[in-house]
Length: 52
Figure 1 (cartoon, helix red, strand yellow):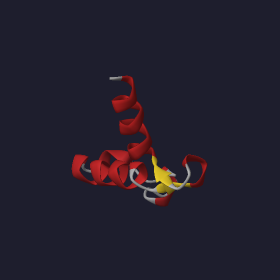
Figure 2 (cartoon, helix red, strand yellow):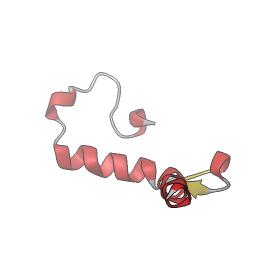
Figure 3 (tube, one colour):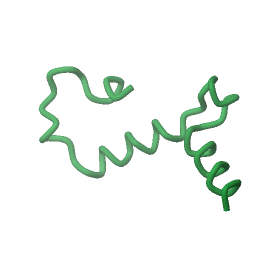
Figure 4 (cartoon, helix red, strand yellow):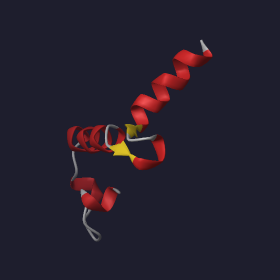
C-alpha cells in the first residue's frame, strides 16, 4: 500500500512527518472489503469500545 504514495527507490529521508501522517490517515480510513467495507480505523475503535 505504501508504494501507492512512495515510489520504489525514493529516499524516504526526504518525506516529511506531515506527509507520512497524511499517508497513514488515508490508508487507515480506506474502506476494506475484508472488514465489510469498513475502514481499519472503524474496526479498531469498534473493537476497543466492545472490550471496554
